[in-house]
Picture 1 (tube, rainbow, N blue to C red):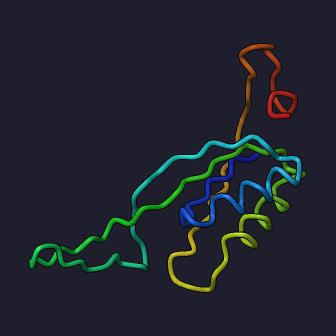
Picture 2 (cartoon, rainbow, N blue to C red):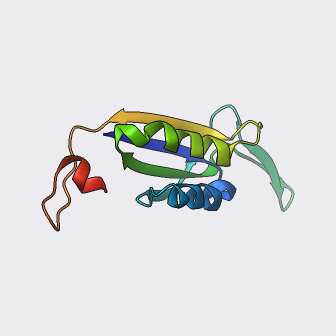
Length: 113
C-alpha cells in the first residue's frame, strides 16, 4: 500500500476528485493548507500599504491506495492539475505498513477498499 499526498491549486480540486471517483478511488482526505515554493507568493497593496504574501492557499489531498492503483492515481492527479505554470503542485508517495478499518477490524488492502 502507498500513501499519496498531493499539494494542488484549490481550483483543481473538483476535477481531481471527479477523476478519482470515476476511477473507482473514492477515499480521500482534503485539507486546506498554506505554503510556498518556486511560486514565491505575491505583493498586494491594501489601503496604501504594501504587503508581501508568500504563503499561498493550497489544497492537500491524501489517499491510501493499493500498489496496483498507484500509477493510475498519480496520472489522474497530474492530468487534472497540470497547467504548465509555476504553482501546479507536487505529489509525494510514501509506503504504508498497515491500515485498519476500525468498524470491521479489517486490515491491509481490505481496509482501504
